[in-house]
Length: 96
Image (cartoon, rainbow, N blue to C red; front, side, top):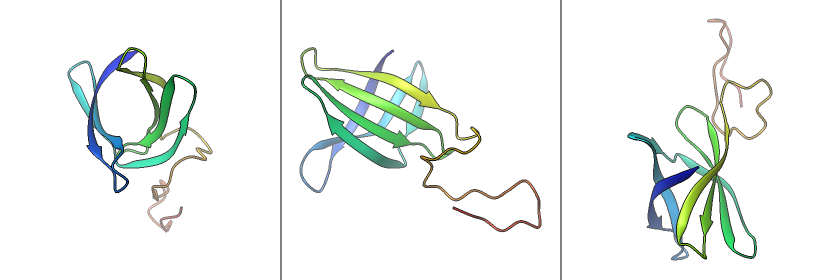
């Protein structure tokens, strides 16, 4: 799925995604969990404020962005979330 991405320079000077758009909806990038490079693409695994995870791919050949994966923060055993969530029980403490 092709998307529009707004980037800002990182402390290293590389452009990193800070916000992207799914149709008219804006998704704020809370954290970049991982990044990796392939021959023609740069991948970012990002989290939004709801704990949802996305993999965004920048295509160097066509200078465009795509969303290649989405995982809801509600998925059981979501191993990628760095955001602490409270359990449904009001007596439970937040955990990571």
